[in-house]
Length: 316
Image 1 (spheres, rainbow, N blue to C red):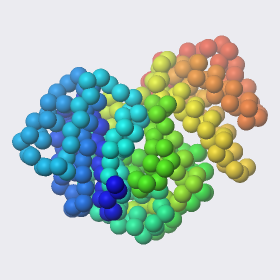
Image 2 (cartoon, one colour):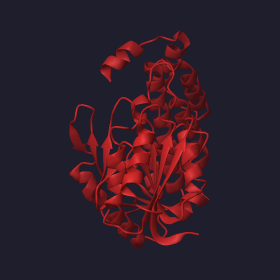
Image 3 (cartoon, rainbow, N blue to C red):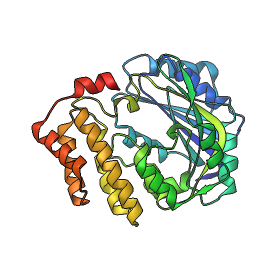
Image 4 (cartoon, rainbow, N blue to C red):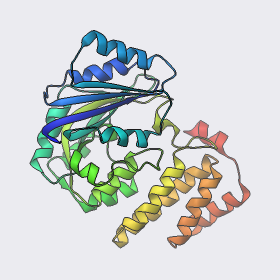
């Protein structure tokens, strides 16, 4: 049964031995008391599972923390949905084992969500740490000023079609809505693009003007492999999401945004030599009746299967 006001945090770790303790302790040290934590080791090949178990044994935080260790790696979206079904909180957080929460993240996020009872989720700012240690804010100050206090409706759905705008690790979902809408799409290799679009197409969402999460970017990060040469695991899912957007769209301007997105993803598919998925984007472009020189050039590139991925790696 859902417990009013409680936040359920699902922390999924995979080979996060260097960071998992920080992630766990960032939840324990939140200034928000009504919470529970499900820690999942997703078949790590390093010491992550042992570190999790040792930490729980030594710190004995009680029934508010549970640990699940998988013997084999499971697809992320499928694993998250499995854990989502175990949660009892009014709100849900998806925390990666290599990130951590700032102490007031839950309290500030819940406070903002309660101001808009029908909002599907709240998001906030984040500190992004590059692999070389450089840190920067996810949003510029003008973005924060623009988002502050607004209730973002259907027009925000169009924004998300066009570009990635939400700092995904900061999202706090309203559990009931997330469950009604089926959680994450288990057929996809990553979750944020799809779930944000599905929810914003139906529900309002809100922004909280605090810095909620410290997000690490490194070579093993899922986002780092978005346009991996030859065999991107993420691009086929992006194609599938674009196909779903076509079905969700209601206006001409939303269709224009989708066309621009398809051309963008097609370009990167070609540059990274993911030619099979590029063919899928070309087919979708034709179904959307995209015209112009840009698409014609991309079709020639695909026909010739010109491999420029070596240059793409250097440029990106």
